[in-house]
Amino acid sequence: MLCTLLLTTLVLARSFQVGVTLADVLGVTQKAFAKSVDRMQGGLTAAFSKMTVVRNELVERLWQVEKKLQVTNRELKTKIEGAVGDARNSVDEVGQQIESLQESLRGMENQFGSIDNSMQFAVRGVHMLCSYVAEIGNLSTLAKSELTQFLGAVEATGDLPKLEAVSMGAVQLSSDEAAK
Image 1 (cartoon, rainbow, N blue to C red):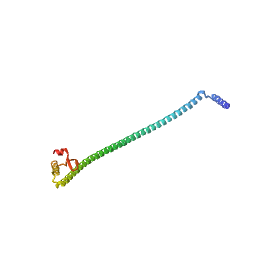
Image 2 (image 1 turned 120 degrees about the vertical axis):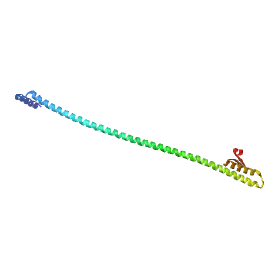
Image 3 (image 1 turned 135 degrees about the horizontal axis):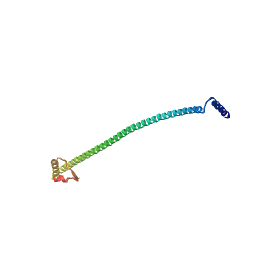
Image 4 (image 1 turned 30 degrees about the vertical axis):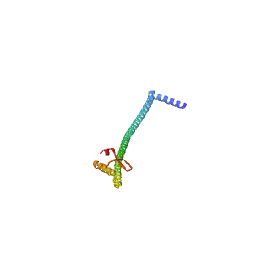
């Protein structure tokens, strides 16, 4: 290290003898410093431009992701609305089927009621005929009058009279039929 110092001193002394001034030596140093600063500024400018490019790419990618999310959100919303609509239609259809079944049941109840009335009418008629046939030998007019009254009620109303009770050979008309 001592050698380097001695050598530098000798070179500087010889330079001053030849006419090189301290300003000349500092000028070289200023030029080198200016070049270094320029290189650093160029490096910083390049780094800033690369950072700007990266930032722009990130912004673009984020925008694309956001756009994709919006499209996916719309698609999901459409699918959900469709599924809800299908479910609503299915529920409405089930409700209509239930109403149809209830209407069918009411119709069956009415038919069963009509069949019941017809059966009661047939049972009553058979009972009266049997009573009349059984009384033919006794010449009883009670069975004949019941049969005549029954036939008169059928002809007058055009409907089957309802049977309130059948008891041990006697047929009783309902109160509204008895009034006729």
